[in-house]
Image (cartoon, rainbow, N blue to C red; front, side, top):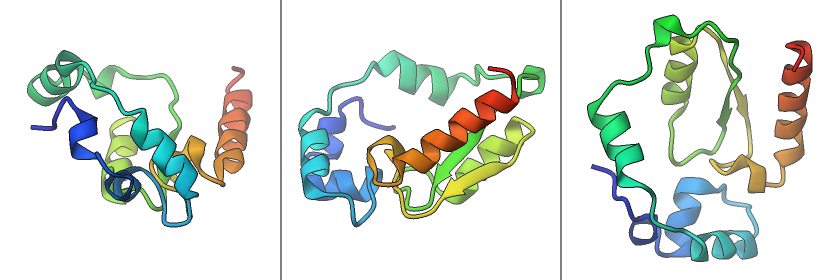
Length: 123
């Protein structure tokens, strides 16, 4: 079972980098983020997503954009593709960024893709 205390699992910048960031993310960003890790709600993660399959993929008809990070240490490309397949779409990957894409140097390309996708869907 995944710990409810990320600060225990990722208690050093090196451990946080391996899961959330790519190799070239500035150390200052990794250290700042690691210092801010907090406990998460155990009910939301462990019960709802581990023991109960609450998402009924076949009933989801809303278009979804599924993005993956090329250097994600948390979710593998296969897991991201599996998520996209469950929602009847294709996964899109951004090379050179880690799991926390919004904190990486390539964040603007990710934001542009989201903005464009939202526009093409009238959102």
